[in-house]
Image 1: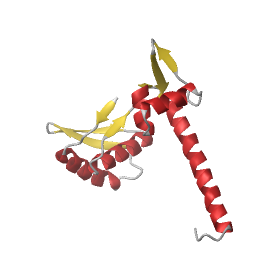
Image 2: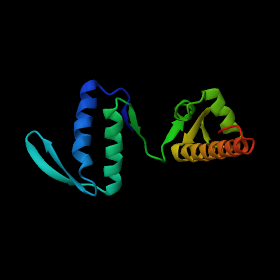
Image 3: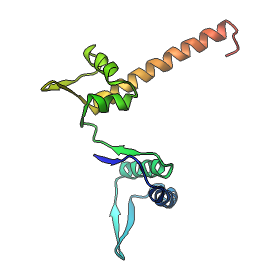
Image 4: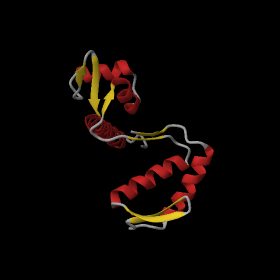
Length: 144
């Protein structure tokens, strides 16, 4: 897991410079890397380049970034933090069967992929409910 939770101002400035350099490289598949005066070209898959651009953008804005493999297992507190809910609420969601989990001793573990799938379903349900409310408000002439 790569964890940059509190980027320093220097890191944010360096990320901004790197992001500006990459922004003109749409479609590029290699980067020139310089370390200790030596340069080398590094071939990158297009998907990696897009992730790199996103990470640099977040750090340039001063936001923390965490890169985690989709198959990684999270503690209940880590999962709750991702959903921005309390751990007790997450435990209720897990126990309801909405998100698969397993126990390691007495501790719950959630796969990140399962958590993100739940989050996507939940957000889609929220969007549908909001669309329904908006349509109803339009029918009633409430000015929305």
